[in-house]
Image 1 (cartoon, rainbow, N blue to C red):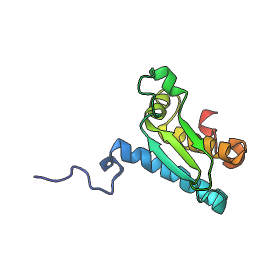
Image 2: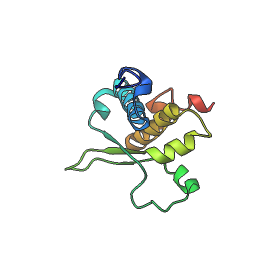
Image 3: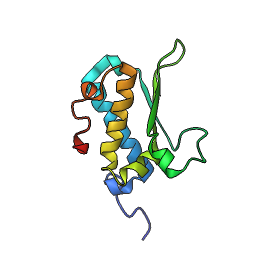
Image 4: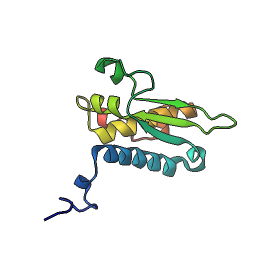
Length: 128
């Protein structure tokens, strides 16, 4: 018998990387529903680790979960979520999907000049 062990429509059929990307996309979609056009042009990307930081210790990586850069005339605003540090931090703190959402909200808040709680009232619920 050959073929997939799980049908593609089941969550277990997705790789961990694909599942992480899905959580980032879900957070972005939630914020787009809340803020509409104001954040529609913001690009959200996922990187394994921050550029140039391959030699950092796990403790150093935990402090750097995401980054953002404002829009310029020739480039949209970009939010970057760092997969490896988020996964490492989530092991001891909370579920990965909740931490991903909090990081996306924090970076969006920084771009908008607002508090994370103002960007999404659900921010930080998992940390309570």
